[in-house]
Each structure stands twice: as C-alpha cells, then as structure tokens.
Image (cartoon, rainbow, N blue to C red; front, side):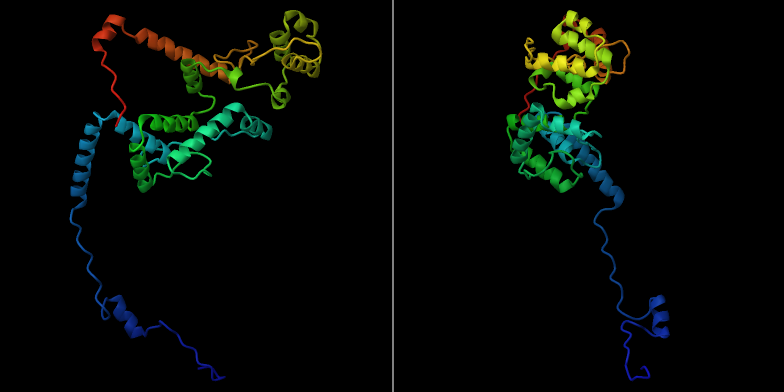
Length: 303
C-alpha cells in the first residue's frame, strides 16, 4: 500500500516458495500426457510411399485424370511445383500501355475471364495461375476439373500455358512455328514503336520495306524523324503514298530476321535455338518404317 493509501494488486505473482516448486514440477495440476500416435513416423512414411506408388502406377492408364491433375498443379502449385506467371515486366510505361491495348492482349483477357468463371474463381483475379500451393485448393480445383469435359479442360490449359509462357524464350518461336503465328493479325505500328526506333541504318531498311529501294536510297541521309515520317505515311496511305497493309518489322515476324549483321536481336537468337533443336531432332528421327513398327495408337484424354 502506498503512503497515499492506494493499494496496488499484483495479479499472477507467486511467492518464492511457490516459484521454486513450479520449477521442480511440484504442486498444481499434473500436465496431460500427450496421446500416442496411432502410427510411428517410419510407419507413416511406409504407408505414404506405398499409396503414392500405387496411385501413380494407376495414373498411367488414365491420361485424362493426369492432365487434369497437372493443370491443377500448374494453377495452384504444390511443395514440388513452382509455376510463376510471366510478369510482362518493363521499365517503360509506354511499352506496358502498348501491350495492354493490343488486340492479342484483349483476346487473351477475354479467354482468361471465361476460364475464371469456369473454375468458379473471382472475375477480379488478375490471372489464373500463381497459387500458393495450398493442398485444400489444389484438391478442390482438381475435382472441379474432373467434372469438366475435355473441351473445358483444354480451354483452361491454354490460358494456364499462355500465362506461364516465358516472354522472349525459344518456346515462343517453337510454338508459333507449329501453329503458324501471324503478327500482322495482332500488331500495328503505334506511336510507342516509333518513339523507340533510334537506329538510322534500320530506319533506312524499313523505308525500303514499305517504299522500295529507290525511295530508301534517295532518303538514306535524311534525319530519323524524316525516315519515320515516310514509313508512317506508307502505312497509313497518307500524303499520296501507296498504303502498305500488314507490315511487320523483321524482328517481330515469325520467324524473325535482322536488318543488319551487327547482331543483338534477341528474337533472332531465340529462333536460332529452335532451328538448332529442330535439326537435332531430324537427325535422331527414325525412318517411316522404323517409326511404324513402334507407333502406338493415340489414347483419348477423357477421364
């Protein structure tokens, strides 16, 4: 008690005697003995591994189930699966805006929205992929995919693969070569593109692309602004110039090529890797007779 008469209570405090007894485990309620697990750690591992072996063996005869399980893993992730969506990162806001406003991006966004609805996910999600590996969500998504027909699963798969396709990688060119990528259907020269053009030699070559060798030679010493103006005029059919339809810079085409011999074009380098892989595959491919002997009929994807 203080001199003023105020009394202070110290709740929870124990005496020295009680404290020493507690340290020795004396007094108070006895601690509850933990329940003994039904199986030991080693026995649990034994059970898990045998169940795993049996399941993946049975999965060999169910490609439709395997496909759905793979899609679920690609979307949600797991302790063994780490799949990251392509960030489409750039330090230039103009580039980001140009891509976001493109026909290709709008088309993909519409497909993504349909998949989000199909999977019962929020339409506000920026992407389908990028999960945290949660087991409950993984199992739930797998079960939802099992309820979908092949067409629905393939729609999900296409968006998942599109979101996780590495920009600038050889995979982009490998896929485009198989399905016939046509940049002219998705791209047109915008202000951002012309703002990024700096190289005079390249600009002269582009003038030749759209206006012909004679015009390019006559304007070879002009400033970059003039050369860009010539290109833009031909693409728009302005100033009495013949309009050029479907023009795409050589670097952006499928397959890409360069305007100079100086190198440094990443798209050309990536396409070169695909060409090398294709040549290696051709050298390893068996003859038609040999392939026919080992060919198996395709299996349906239906679960």
